[in-house]
Structures are given as C-alpha cells and as structure tokens.
Length: 201
Image (cartoon, rainbow, N blue to C red):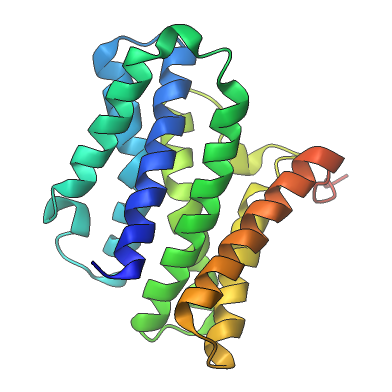
C-alpha cells in the first residue's frame, strides 16, 4: 500500500472519530453518529476529488474509506458514555486529521500540476471540508470562521510546507511528516496561546 494511502486512511479514521464524538456530544441517535462520522471522515476528500476532476471521487470506488468511517462511528457508539472524558482527545484527533488531510490535499494537487495558489486552496479545502460539513449538519458556526481557532491557517502552513519540500526536491515521506508536524503544532500552539488572526473593526 502506498504511503500516501496509509496516511489518507489514518486521516479519515481520526476525522471520523472527531465527527462521531461531536454527534454523541450533541446526543444524536445511532444513525446520526454514523452519518457524522462518514461526513467528517470523507467530506473534504470528496470535495477535493470533485475539484480535481476525479470522477467518481475515490471514496465511491474504494469502499475501505467508508468502512473506516463506520468503524470509527461504532467505536464512538461503544464508548459514547465516556464522551465528556474524551473531549480533549477529540481535539487532538481533529488537529492530527487537519494536518494529515492538508498534506494529502497538497500532494494530490501537486500531482495534478496545480500552481502554488491551487495547491494551497486544495490543501486547505481537503483539511477543513469535512469539519465544515460536520458543523453545518450540527447547525453550528464552522470552526474555520470562529475567532481564535486558527484552523484554516494551520492547514495552509501544512500545505505550504509540502510546496517547499516539493520545490527543493525533498524526500516525499520526510516532507509529509514535517508538514503534518507543522500543521498540528501550529494548531496546538494557537489553542494553547489563544492566537488568532486580527478581527475586522
């Protein structure tokens, strides 16, 4: 299995966990948990594939992505009674998923010969798309629009790191690891220090 696919499955798993726990936190039923797990796990990837002209999107031709989401949802259902205890871990999973999907989106955009603006856009959309779908389904303001979350910026930093690595012909696996660390650490740092972009006055 190609390393990028392994990374993709991991990102789907942790994002689906995040969506499932959010569903449990909002007291959705069993179907609601599974739907949120799937939407969060593969939503960003579907949007990415549509924009890149991958038809049909990968999730519809490789059922393993759906099975990974459903497995995450079932884990949440089994441990839903402990959801309050695991909320901090959900934030960690969400941050890791953000970094992983930012890297995957950037690499696939590069493979499709997009320019640097397109790479950053696809990277960010892949990373935040599932979360936006999750928040809209829960009738919440998407996290990328909330002051102090530093969400999309962290994804852009991860995508930019992939671009830099590609420009200087770094090893792809090393670049991917560094880019994930950049995105995740910047997200955690922003959460810890309360960093955010300035508001419009």
